[in-house]
Length: 207
Image (cartoon, rainbow, N blue to C red; front, side, top):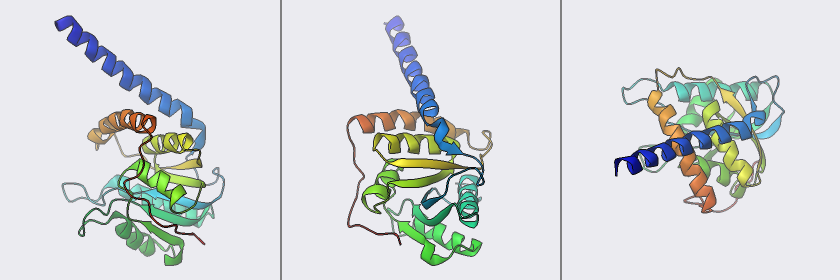
């Protein structure tokens, strides 16, 4: 019994590791770290997260993603931004929060489009295609997150590249990086079973 349990654990760990490596390897040529090197696209898809940590401090993942989006806009690498995030309750609205902060950073309001149903990365990527009618765009998040988003896009026949926001030190958010490994396994399962976004809706044209 103990041998079977150990064998099962080894198989699970190996599956997680191999899955993680495959997603990283298969998307590495699609990620960029400097605005000068990335091709220009009409639209950037900014993936949302909470502005604050549970301790009430500004979430560095959030801060660096917005800075990356502003960097792309200022360098004419994107003309418009889709702000995609969770708005599952009246008091929690990631897209609106991102919009207000980007306005303060100097990005014009008419360049910002809000996606209130980006509950998961899969939802954000697929909705950019099916709702906003964009199949060729730049994803904006940290590198580890971009890789998973690109893997989804590639499997959905979406022509995407990604711009890596500044990384957050591992010791600051170790839990996030551990959770990412499990999220990658869930992503493969979702794609295998052809899981769709929770909500779609009418087309929103970006122009």
